[in-house]
Amino acid sequence: MTYTPLALTLIFVLIPLILSRTLNLGLEKDTTIATVRSVIQLLIVGYVLKFVFDTEHLVYLLLMIALMITVATLNARQKGKNIPGITWKLAVTLIVVEVITQGVLLGFHIIPPTPQYIIPISGMLIGNSMVLAILFLNRFSSEIEAHEHEIELILSLGGTPKQAVHRHLTKAIKASMIPTIEAQKTIGLVQLPGMMSGQIIGGADPIQAVQFQILIVFALLTCATLTSIIFGFLIYPSLFNERMQLIKNSFI
Amino acid sequence: MTASHVIQLDNISYKINGQIILSNISQQVQTNSITTLIGPSGSGKTTLLKLCNALISPTNGQIFVEGQAIDTFEPTVLRRKVGIVLQQAPILRTTVFENLALPRRLQHQTLTTEEALNALIDVGLDESFLMRQATDLSGGQKQKIAIARTLLNNSTILLLDEITSALDPQSVHDIEQLILKLRQRGVTIIWITHSTRQAKDLGDMTWVLMKGELVAAGTTNEIMSSKDSRIQSFLLGRTP
Ligand SMILES: Nc1ncnc2c1ncn2[C@@H]1O[C@H](COP(=O)(O)OP(=O)(O)O)[C@@H](O)[C@H]1O
Ligand SMILES: [Mg+2]
Image (cartoon, rainbow over all chains, first blue to last red; front, side, top):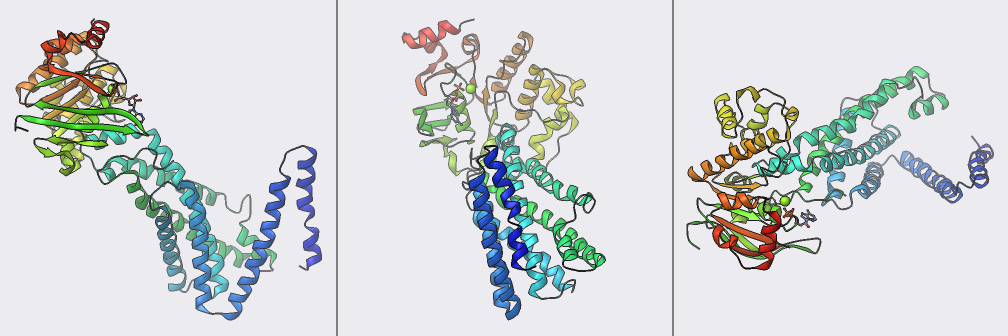
């Protein structure tokens, strides 16, 4: 694609702008900001990727991944600013997910050890992990809020914090994983996954594109499971102080 | 402090979000006695019991249990020693037996059917309840299950928060007999009650809490004949 047809795609930005103005939706400012940001961000990413691919230097690859993990951590921590230690707990979760998934993919030679593979797959997995961590946090805090008296009861009878939250923790872990599993049941039927679409448009053989997509689907399952479980077990102690007392509102 | 003071409150205060809930309370509880805790709602009675079960910690001051500072106990050990029946304690969505077995499960132990049965009989229920779904029971029956459940920790000190408020007259009588029986077994009891009659009939000592202050504490007879106008009007307003 050259820049002329790309510029013409701005029509897709003009349509919502005009409609928003006509119907007084008040979305002009947000739409404009979103447009400008996405263009700038994607262009930067494109050039950075080109640079990393061309130099083929391990340091740049690691820097890229570190950057992705940092951005994902900073983004997800917005949802739980009051939770002590949330930043490192998120970072550890994302790092473990990345290390395990890439360990399997590279260790078993499932993908070639080149930035062209490692970076996009890492991006997808880390991004998914981030969304899942946020989902888990929402779920877990509403579970805790709804069952505060039960938690208090177990503590009052001499139970440990872990015993007091165990049922609610596993419920939240399970609930946050369900969308990933459900999405995979209808995958390809309604909507072609982004990566697969991209490959097909890019001229790849659909069967090969599907094979890669299957790889991603499986990796996402592990990613979802690992994220909820690791993050869940790292985060629940933040609900309690060292006297085994429930700290009210610590997640809100 | 002497060994006969099983709980000693040493100038304790409790604040939350800058609001004073309890202020400067100093008092002690004699071993093997029933202390009734009375006062208008919102006066801080429940908060005081939660402090003694270490579900919360005082903002200032210190609580001693059997002469030992409360915050030097392992919390799980302290909470079994000083048991609490919370007001409207939650009932787990499972059988009565499983509810009763909870304290043991928390210690990775099992409860025998016989122990469960004895606990039921203690609170005036029978074996037919054992396998029933606890959430299907009436409010009063649930309350009794909650009492039996806490009793299964064999606490030497028991904190009871308005445990008879949901009960019919016969059940109230059963629970009152149980409380007397527990004292006989050597248990020390602090009991929040809304009923002046219960305080009169069962309390050895009575504490009166108003707006977070312990306005009076003494033998139940002393409190009932108090000349303090605040206490007088509170007792009159509550007498059945
Ligand atoms: N966790 C809490 N957050 C805010 N206020 C509380 C909390 N716990 C108790 N309070 C307040 O403390 C006061 C005393 O409550 P409580 O001890 O339950 O009184 P009582 O049992 O005598 O009715 C009440 O005004 C209540 O609203
Ligand atoms: Mg109360």
